[in-house]
Amino acid sequence: MLIVLKMNSVGEGCTDLKREYDQCFNRWFAEKFLKEDRSSDPCTEMFKKYQHCVQKAIKEKNIPIDGVEFMGPNKDKPDS
Amino acid sequence: MVKYFACVGHLKSSWDQVCIAFWERYPNPYSNHVLTEDIIFREVTPGNRLVSRRLLTKTNRTPRWMEKYLPVTMARHAYIIEDSIVDPQNRTMTTLTWNISHARMMSVEERCEYRINPDNTSWTEINREAWISSNLYGLSRAIQEFGLARFKTSVTKTMKGFEYVLAKMQGDTPSRTLAEHATERARETALAAKEKAKGLASQAHKKQQYV
Image (cartoon, rainbow over all chains, first blue to last red; front, side):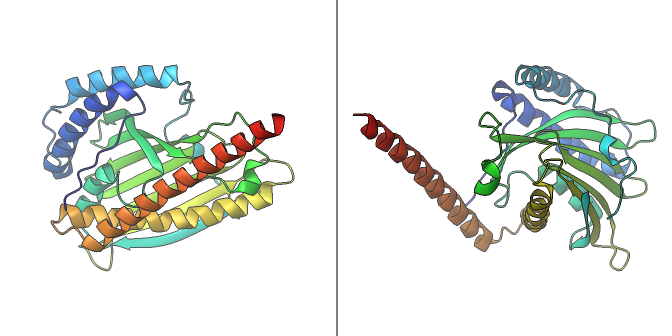
């Protein structure tokens, strides 16, 4: 029994673009990036299309992603 | 007041395989609560590190005692952000995951370092830390305890999910977990149907009272 499942995008109309990009990225990540091959990224166009779609969906759904610094919340964490 | 938690875990796969699996780990039999997954930022730095931001939506399953204190309009879905840095030169990956919704009620932040296991270089070591806090007056301790308990369960699910995906990548899908998956899905469907029936029943009952 082979179950082939893939995740959906938060933007209902973006799922196909997401899956196309993910497939391209996964290949590049394993075959180029991890081998420290710095040749150009073949996925940039796909990424642009996908981002255009998903960023629009995020705005429409008022998902509060703005203004959060990269790795932001982990500055000066207390231990207790 | 913040609850702190730390643990070390191991995956019996190479660091490379684990990083590949990291991007492919959804869906898996242990992630039925994860509804959507999106990369919303990604860049390779001049130092050849990969930085990414991933947005997840998850079902917001809170216990009934907590639900009483939540406003009725509160979203049924939670939004989570995961930032990551993959360094192929040093063979390390650092991730930071936190919720951007419901944060005042309960905030969970998790930081992980993935590196080659120093005792067995074909394995991967994961150093995990979490900070759980709540700002709701009077309830914060109970919420933090709930948050910590749920976090520990989710760590187990995360590791099982990783192991499942890694096994699949290496060509052997454990049939037992497929059966578990089917069982869990059936259970969740049945539970959803039961909840819906309960809701409809109580609506019908209310209508009756007005007749």
